[in-house]
Length: 303
Image 1 (cartoon, rainbow, N blue to C red):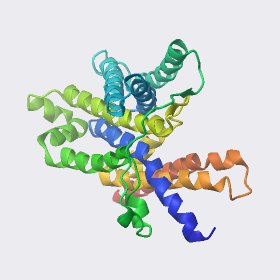
Image 2 (image 1 turned 45 degrees about the horizontal axis):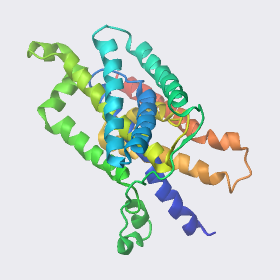
Image 3 (image 1 turned 60 degrees about the horizontal axis):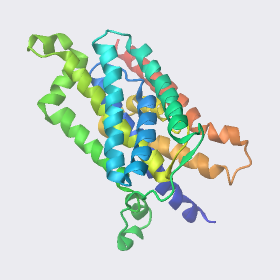
């Protein structure tokens, strides 16, 4: 296999792999701009993954499965937000509790509903619609980058533009950012910062529900712990992307490429499998260190 043949599937798979990072990152950005670090992204993705495929299997409809999965994830996000904002619990503790609860809840429901704590397979589940334009798909690199993906991938791209418009071109976006940077000014204007923080949390529930749906509906099955750290990586993506929608798009592509390369490397490189599987997380830690160093040096220069 030559390098050209090798690069095409890597690029194509990178676009699919990056989508959960992108969607979760966009949702996490909303809470970040509102002054809350949402470390519950991992649990929200897991909830979305489980309920999307279960509802799709029960109803026989992908659209209903995705919609009900999103609503369930938003409900879970609301509970997390209510405990944090209304009961004044520590956001880090409630975030960790949400992640643990999501893992336990999906396991219990899996056993109660299907009699297994392992992989749930759903035969006859419809596949996600894929956009195929043969004349354009044949364009080198660009065709493989833009076409042949399922509908949720394109929604992930659309979410970047929608988030940019919402954040920078609407009154809601100005107030959301004001909540994170100067909540006293928001209160002085007669508004409640908590309302905008809750709105950010609910948006993160929506996007994480979609992120989870793409994981399970692509497989037609639910695998325990299918989120596999994607929520944590999404947090890194937010900061690596400079806390902007288009920056998150670029950072998501980097992490998607790292995971895609690690998948292909298992069949081509004589390297221990554990190291190859850990490669995306090595990239995550490295990126965090680099960003921290850059911020430290920038702050030092400004002084």
